[in-house]
Image (tube, rainbow, N blue to C red; front, side):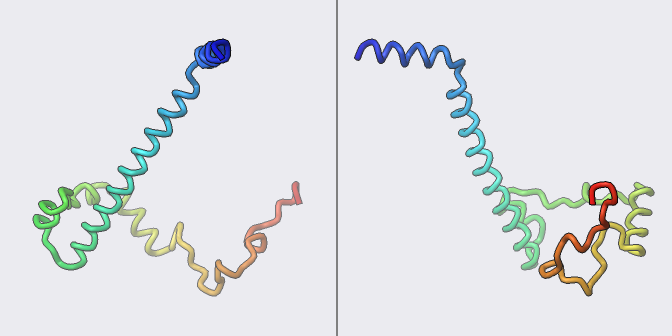
Length: 118
């Protein structure tokens, strides 16, 4: 019995600590998931409060979140403003074919066949 304990201790010393690293990574991942879920819930509550007509100060003091949208828009960026205008006109990057139901269409019929691979 003494030999098996010393053999397992030697094996754990020889493993390079992989098991400890995996445990640490799992712990960090769990904490990160919990944090992300909590932040998503706060963001959802802030969005709901905005929809219900609460002012920015009430939302900020209640949830401790900033509701300043000044960093979300950049009117000084001419390239971005031009892109937004062109996107409105052309629908670039947007799905425009209303007659095709993506739930029922077979995906292979929606792409061109590659001549090399068939």
